[in-house]
Amino acid sequence: MDQHNQNAGGGDERVNNGDYFVVKAKEQGVQVIGLTRGKDTRFHHTEKLDKGEVLIAQFTDHTSAVKIRGKAVVMTKHGRIDTEE
Image (cartoon, rainbow, N blue to C red; front, side):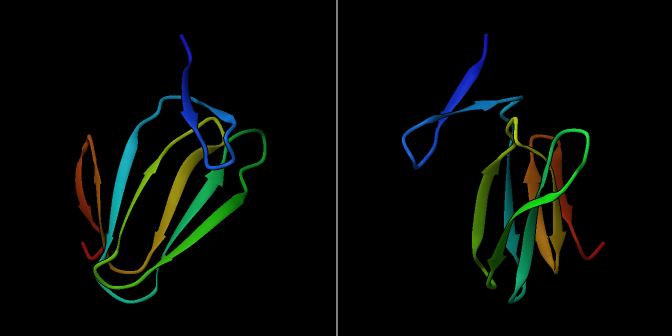
């Protein structure tokens, strides 16, 4: 059974596994970059976070990976990752 996520435009976006993750910036200008699924992996979305800001995001049929630039804490169901380590 497919899960669905209601997006801001009012349409449904199919969710592949629906895992959420949290990124908390430990410095100004942390970049969170979404990468596409499919034959060719490409950048499709970038967010810039200031120190202390938190981004809660979800993997979807369109997003397969995320790249983090800068000092941040990333929290997933698999644990906590500190980009300084």
